[in-house]
Amino acid sequence: WQQWYQQYTTWYSQQAGGGAKNDSSGAQQQQQQQQQQQQQQQNQAYVPPKGPAPPKLDAKFEDHALYQIKSSVLKEMESMVNEGMEVAKRKKALRFLQLRWHPDKNPDKLEIANSIFQFIEETKPWFLHDPNAEGS
Image 1 (spheres, rainbow, N blue to C red):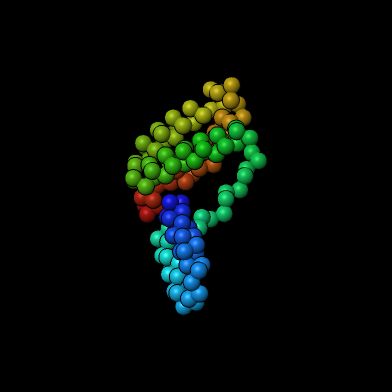
Image 2: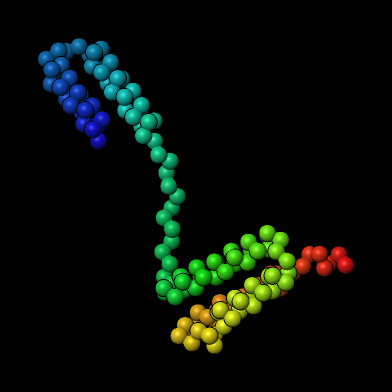
């Protein structure tokens, strides 16, 4: 803002002071200088455009919370698989998740617990898959 204001005042003073002169080449040079200054400012202050705004979800809070919980459970499972954790340890972790999110253990949030428990059951074959057992 300050740069723009400074350029504007410079331009205004030149226009006011140079109005008496009828020097067209001087006016053209001033215009060229102003255009160069504007281009320099645009190049310096160039910020790449942002992508489109994310779509607004018309979902309830429970849906957002459910998505976040499922994502965190999946990330936890993926990290265990990527680290090459033994199948016995993964089974133990799966059992812990099943107990934690069992609908009977969470009567106050029954729908959420049921959905997460079903998600855990759906990912169970992938999570407990043992690539070493296939070769045998």
